[in-house]
Length: 173
Image (cartoon, rainbow, N blue to C red):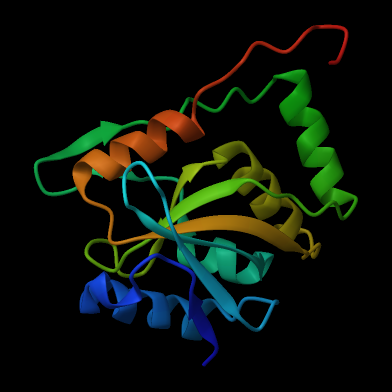
């Protein structure tokens, strides 16, 4: 297993987070063959960026990701999927045509919903487009940023950053 901790103090990372990182590496087999682990300098959240295949993302992932599974399991920060949005329709077409997506943000945790340890926090539209393409036999590798061992404050920060939108000029669309 080739995991490299590129953090200021690797010994300070909790053993349960290291176990989670190892579990992710074994289960998802990133195409890079090596997992570089980083630490967010503001929240101290531990994460990696890698590429994994659509089969693994969809079989082991979910967009049903609560902010606080224990105390507020009904609260979700993901934006509503707008099925008829022109950009989303184009995204689904692109996925069917074999486009590989990036910027999917997720948390890997087996603390709840053990069947879907990859909880998509940002990129639910891409997740749906990938799932639809996969159901029609189109499978690519996709870029994901995966967090490990988030506490509620860190999870809120990741959800806010991942789901912040800046208006896109209609000329670009």
